[in-house]
Length: 605
Image 1 (tube, rainbow, N blue to C red):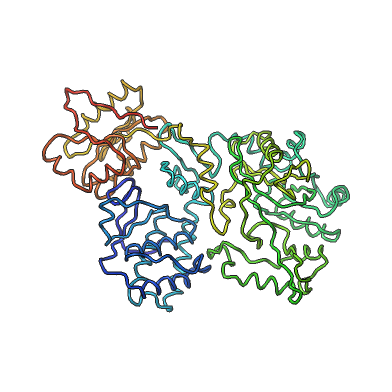
Image 2 (tube, rainbow, N blue to C red):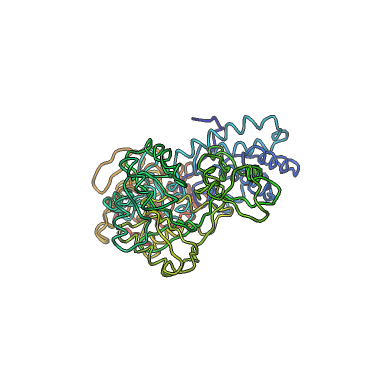
């Protein structure tokens, strides 16, 4: 779905305005009226279904900052918080322009246009709310389909750290972090290091459970359920409560709980609709934790409790639940709510019954009542708790052994224990399952996001400071035919460094001897071709001054920029061009003459 917005300049890579890609919007030179800001912030609180996180926004200093603040709040609600950018001295002087990291481009552009409209006189009237909210919801659905779940967290974390991030498929399924032969591929959290057989074993709950039990890992006991008779035998052997799930269960699809004998047949039948291959599992008591493991290290741990209410001696369970659900932050997830209402479904009713309660009973004051057995937020659970620093060494060793037994490089371990800070050998614990390709979203389900995030820690492991992650980029900035000069520089790099080197120019790309044709008229298009080639060490880019100023450098960093000695070209080295090269970290040098040997870019990692 395309939403019409006003055209606005987009600068890719390092540019004259800021240190990274930026979406610009002309806001004019009018001063910011205090009453207009207050009205705009109040309107945004009305328009966003869950409202603003704190009900207010920080006071901006001018109109450009007001537009940036409002637009950033909209993008954060749309699950793509803008990565902070630093204005250059030239950018700082242009207070008639607002700038925001693009993220999902359609959402960012619309958010900036809407923010500017709302700061105009009369732009925050309530009669405009319904249309604006409907448009934002439609755009939010589009942005969620652009980069789903883990991929958007990887994108934002890579941008924060200055790691090049590129999409390798139109649908955004496969992405790349790093450039050329230093790049690593990601399919969500799976990488080229993730063993396919290990993923297949881990995805089958029966095979994984068997492998882990043989290795001495405390697991839920399982029984296959080919029919209802087998389910009855499993109930007798494993006891109650009993969990029924598909062998290849994902995201709780087909999972059912048997709390009493009468539940067995309907729960079995409901799960059988989802999959014919079912398992029965013994229930592991305790608090559920998701442990993110990467390359033999625990990256992050979150703890979650099922939805619960606390009795006050006067209100029924139904009334207590209604009071919790009245929180404006709770609502349908497709409307941008991070917290979901506590459902009054059959599973909740049966779970209440195990505690001797019905929805119309009045719990004693101070009594905690679990309303739903599943600790996921989509079933009404509250914010997660960061438990990374609380795990006992014995329990950490057990979790890491489980991931190693399955042969996974990255995994999300579902661990249940009554006390994470005490040894599992002392208090008891068990693994529900080990998830290959785990979602990173659960590690962001906090009322206040921890800094650094789980994804930052994951990238610390995969891209340590000593590991190179980008190619070496050399630019020749000028107007005449500079291909011979580019060939001299590329040849020098090949001889002295043993590198495979690409050459790019408007209308032509050479991938170390392979003619790749024309990738498009903008620097970012040509950069993408070379950065996604897994054979390359370096690239020499022929860039026109006007395309750099108009579109940005197209790449995040540049080692050396050569400038031809011609006086006409030297005069074209404007303040904007100089600022762009500085933002890219480039060393600016005069282009050597044909009889001179060009000095190559020094390795920078």
